[in-house]
Image 1 (cartoon, rainbow, N blue to C red):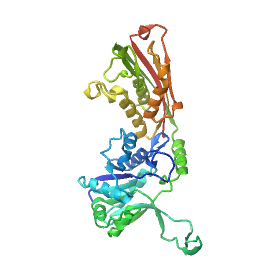
Image 2: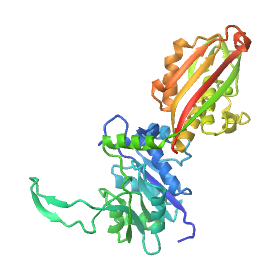
Image 3: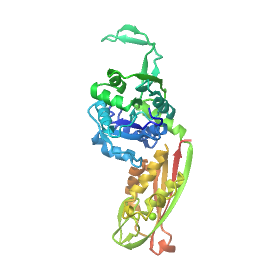
Length: 389
Ligand code: MG
């Protein structure tokens, strides 16, 4: 093994999550404002900062995947198969050209694994062990029943474990095991590794490293994250764009018909710019110009959605969540009221906030100043962000 092994992490996210209610597969549902998949990726990165991460998805979920991972800087996802094992096989095949020393295989719905456990599992893969997995010793008594639920046998619990992920392997060994001893219905990767004769070490897992399976797991997880998010920050933003010839303006992501347009390098959406700066301000991450310099021609005419999305993802990458956004648009015209609902809907889609956590207000300056002279539109915004302490 190299002194500093090259590590890839395969996140298996191709499932339908049918055991949990709701329209969205569980790996794409949000917990405290951040999708489960993004939280799981964050947990793996915390333990293995240099790992290249590849996610295996159901291609029908591509839009959900893109929304959940924007800003995370991931490689192109791999299309999964019919079963979990098939999805892992495709992921391993996709990593063949990267040929890492070690691969971690993690279920997308396990966002609580600690950095220490990830680290320990990687260290457990040595010249003596082809792989390692986390497990918990069984502490309850075990019984076997017959088909009629009658107890037919006592089962000794000594040396029995319930197992978790990530399961970590020497890449070459597990890739070969999946080629030579593939079983489409294996419920975990160690089953296939063992069929191929690999040596696997059990590492003491964590009670908290649960796989989100039932609806109550989601409410418990929500509480766990929220309890910890006590670092509350408030940021403010301000922006102005001047009028030019045109027939509409973009305000908070909504195209508003007007007899003027707003002049700017991007789509000149003052509302979204002020809000983006407010969120960046709350997490001490500079301003919009730092991240999207006007000197970069890529941003000419850009839809300001991408600026706001980026700020939202920076918050998510820190395990935080936006709690509220308040935007005030300052102009004599156009009228904002008729568009308020669609602006809230637009911002809600990007920030993943409920509508009652988003406020859009409008005011004039009573004919005074540059907005009073109808030379342009100004916007100010406040955002509250909660970060883990
Ligand atoms: Mg601007």
